[in-house]
Length: 172
Image (tube, rainbow, N blue to C red; front, side, top):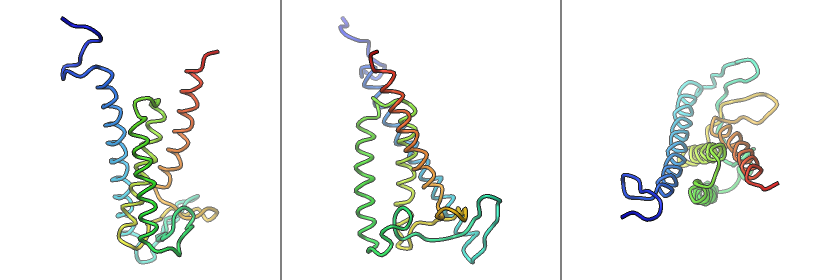
């Protein structure tokens, strides 16, 4: 005899299954984005390591290593300190994103995956002690990489998704 909501094939309530799926998709997407970022950075190092560059119009390819964080802030700090602080921030963000993933809109989850994937890619890249590989140069903006674009776009999507989701759930 069944009481309550129907169970999924695995015996877990459907809402618990959806929550697990939301968390799994978020973390899988973040991991895939980090791997993609690291692969592109590896390619940039292989092709641009001896001062080679490429002019692609509004953007150029040029290899630089950023030992600091955003916009080279903290470049003079000990590498272990930057790594430890960055890892702590990423772990906190990951905990929050995984905890709240089931309640997020899809757009917010996509944004969170981009932020976590980009942040993880830059953290892993930083572990060799040389700094983060940057290779996209505009001439009017600091040189950056795909992970930086993931973080920036992801933050925007997260905020937009949160605003849209809260507006849709607000009574008139």
